[in-house]
Image (cartoon, rainbow, N blue to C red):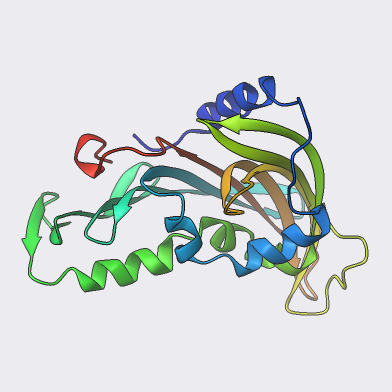
Length: 236
């Protein structure tokens, strides 16, 4: 099942409940904005087998009137480039899905069923383009983010640090095509790999020269099941 906002709220609450204890060595907060921009899928694979559930909800606010634009969801179960599966949904409806086991792929067909495909490489390419939900959802804010170190905790045995996310008051806002207005939320980052494990962030921006048209984006993500044996038992 795709990730829901309440599930992320619960996960954040559970992680916060175990935060605290001795301070560990973690990246300085001022380094995290750069680290999140430079993250690659190679960094993600360092986590080993795991699962990602993410949701990006968008809305438009024009002259104070709000219009929901819908929610996009991504679920990835990763073991290796020869054993993975992912699905993308729009409003809960699957629009793309692939399952790869032992280098053999099955992909979603027009009839809504999974069918064998001869070449798995196009789906590896699609995954390389789709995995970065942080960049997809919050790309407008990437160069204007500020991270504030808040707490520490463990997520399924992985040492993590919590950061508050906001706009950097020293960033040059509005110098491009978009003008970031506000950004708020928290993210738990793996101390070893700097990969985002759990987070919930909301931001607003408007196109340059059109302040009456405000875009809203809400991102929620959760990585779990670290060390799972493979994708077969956790189908999207």
